[in-house]
Amino acid sequence: MNRGLNIKTTSEFVLFLHANESWLMESILSYAKKYGYVKYTSTLLEAWRISIVGLTESFEMLMKSSCEIPQMSPDDSFRDDAASAFGIKEAKLHRSRGVNLAMFFSLFKYYRQAYLDLVEKEKMQIENIDYYINYLHRFFDRVEIAYVSEWAGSDSEEQIHELSAQNRKLANEKNRYLTLFDSMNSPAIILENDGYIINYNLIAGELFFNDMHAGGYYYSNRDKLKIDLLFDMSNLKNNNTFEWQYGEYIFIVTGKSLHDISGKDEGLVVLFNDITELKKSEDLIMVQLRHVAMRDILGMIAHQWRQPIAAISMGVSTILIDIELENIDTDEFKKISENILVQTTHLSNIIDDFKNFFRPSENKEQVKVEELMLEAKNVIGKMLEESEIELSIESEKATIVNTYSRELLQMFIILLDNAREALIQNRDKNRIIKVTISSDENSAYIMFCDNGGGVDKAIISKIFDPYFSTKYEKDGTGLGLYILKTIIDKYIHGSIKVENLDDGACFTIIIGLKDDG
Image 1: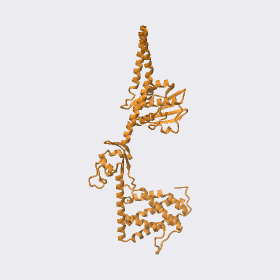
Image 2: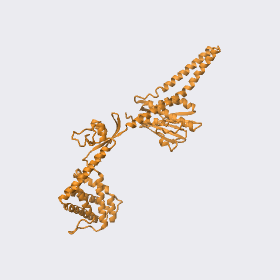
Image 3: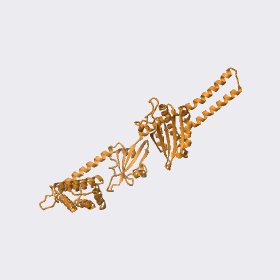
Image 4: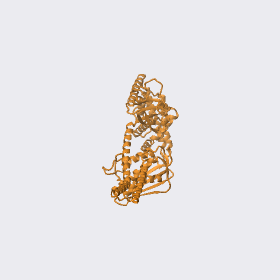
């Protein structure tokens, strides 16, 4: 009960009816379902809403014309008032649709009941309630009398003409639906709940059923096909969406339940969105990503090799000069040779650090995030030192995730290198990168923060887009952070967010601890 309601005037009562049109619609629909009328009525909710709106508007017009309760007399034409006009219009409409008088007349009694139920529900808030109940009764009486009068006033020939015109209209609407359905650029299939195909459009017929004729399945007399010819019906449960490959084509398939409030046409529409070309584009981008990542990693290797190679070169040059000068000192030669061995071992260790970098993980594995972060530090640490950047790694406790370790390692290195470049570009000294590892019962959090000035608010929402670079045009490809987003979407199945904190940017990787397989 709406205790804030207080209806004192006719205009307030009309507003009350309009405000409760949804309730009235649900009420009449409930009666129609309970007593079996929905077998013969519209499957769409909008049709029921329009019927309630039309009734309420007619009631409003009648009440505006006179607040006196409308009465009836033997000389009444039942044509000149709003209630009668509504009844005449509905008689013509439903008669042309083939609805018989008994069906409409009996269903309309439940429309009357729905309005009376509403008034009864709010009776404590309506002053002079008997007046409004009587007015409603006389309104519905006039609608029904006008309806019956109009129906009885037509002869058989007129009724046949109306039915023929309506039949032609229905045939045209059916043909228009079939034309529109077959003109769709994407495949579509309409199914019954048990998986039998009601209809498919032209492009679906060509791609999946070797049917090159528009309307070929709709008009054929062959046995019904089942969707199981393409894929398991269970894939479509709960309006599910999934990726499906059919030959050279790749589709996003979506199942959508039919909007049938009556329940007599249960089933679903299956839509196929062709993403074949998009996948090819993604594959091309992935090749570019690999080339960019290879370039970056070779740059890191070059940085780490420069010092050992210089030491080896200096040692060999010293030996050659001493030989040339016949100044052979065995102990000095031994010392230089041992240093060369140390440097070659260092070079070998660098290769070990990098050799698996581009080898994708074949399976998920239990990974200690802290150990993986130290491995990333070994890869990029020399470059950070040369850039005079202090790297700190903090962890509250050992954090273990079940994931693809090589891909996660690549993400760590991308973020560290991205922070390094931001610091070089924006800060002359006191350059700091702080990595914080934490977790709760649901997720692990790896936060990379720097003091490099942060990301411009105008572009922060775009930095994970392909080919969008925050660097100077000559330096950036715009693929580094896109690689990172691709990895986390395709392999890690986690998320990443970026925000500006204090005097720098913070990127946070979030990985679920409950493995989804």
